[in-house]
Length: 76
Figure 1 (tube, rainbow, N blue to C red):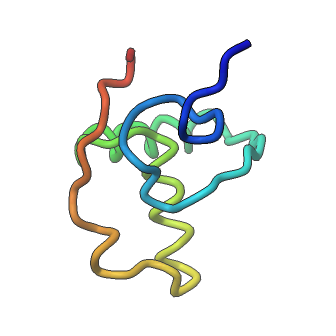
Figure 2: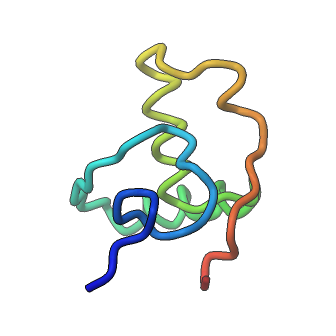
């Protein structure tokens, strides 16, 4: 398997929050619908919505991280 020049990362924009780790979370069904609707309203993925919310709640969100970054369509 051939690795890219970026150390094995897929091509595309640099992740806004830096290196990430996967976490599995089970959301109550009615809650997930609310979160997905709000993410759609903001034009971001559910993942980005949850990351922003948690960062804001813990004082980790900087103003420069709120600016919109080019995001691929959810189906890409």
